[in-house]
Amino acid sequence: MNSVVSRPLILTVYITGPSQECLETMAQTLLAEKRIACANLMAPHQSYYSWQGEMKNELEWAMLLKSQIPLQDSLEKRISELHPFETPCILFHKLECEPQFHNWVVEQTSGI
Image (spheres, one colour):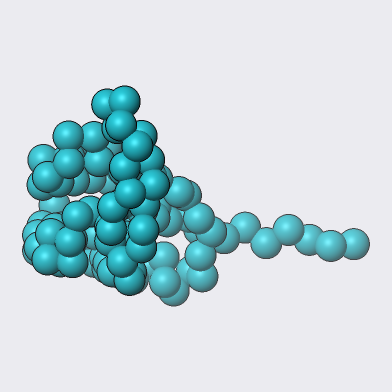
């Protein structure tokens, strides 16, 4: 019989931005404010989308943030304040993780 192992959950947040500098500044701010435990900036990619009736094709950067689930609402608000886009892409995922990593995330994001 297989037993299901319960693992803790963390919040991961995927966002895009117009430049490396923009996302680096956002990551540094969120780290300093203890809203995230870490940020992974990803290589630029080509984005295709429709905006206000026009087809767009632009270079964007992406970033993956790790935080605690209870911080989701305040993190969403703060990212929106810091982000230069009128309608930023902010995607939330709740993912299972290894318990020691979960504990580290909680330690890094406690006390705000």
